[in-house]
Image 1 (cartoon, helix red, strand yellow):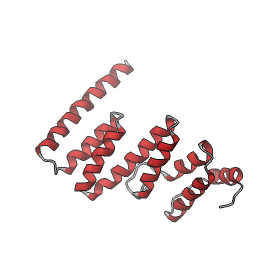
Image 2 (tube, rainbow, N blue to C red; image 1 turned 180 degrees about the horizontal axis):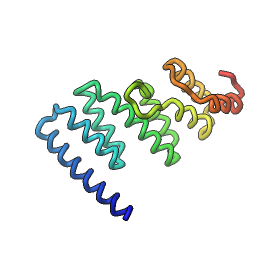
Image 3 (cartoon, rainbow, N blue to C red; image 1 turned 90 degrees about the vertical axis):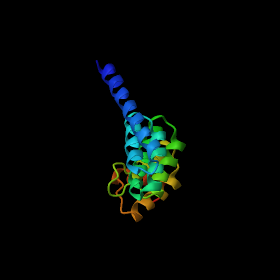
Image 4 (tube, rainbow, N blue to C red; image 1 turned 120 degrees about the vertical axis):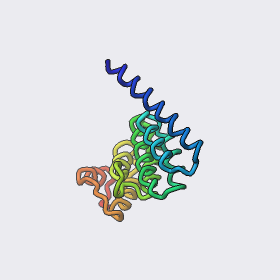
Length: 157
């Protein structure tokens, strides 16, 4: 039954996407249609399409920036799960460069980026750079992760 529910959900999301695409064809300045289309693409497991949608939304309405931040952070997490660490790091960094992890963002890219560099790739200089970005942005990195970075890198900051 679970597979059928997933198939039904995908079908509904596909129909919703078609409706929002039609709305965009009628008025390409309707930022809300891009917003909803991006959300549908995220829910449908199409993060690259969501990023395209939110980029178009942001060009029309700066409030779309929070969605785009989340989309990059979510895509980074997806890549990390696939062990595509370079792609994950690049998208976490994009999210940070855009001000990721701010108010209204569901995904905070700082801690996962530090963890990726510390645990997965052992790129300690980049990990420390991400820690300093987090500190400047008043974002919290868990004490356990900082302790591991100190131990593994042989540095204190």
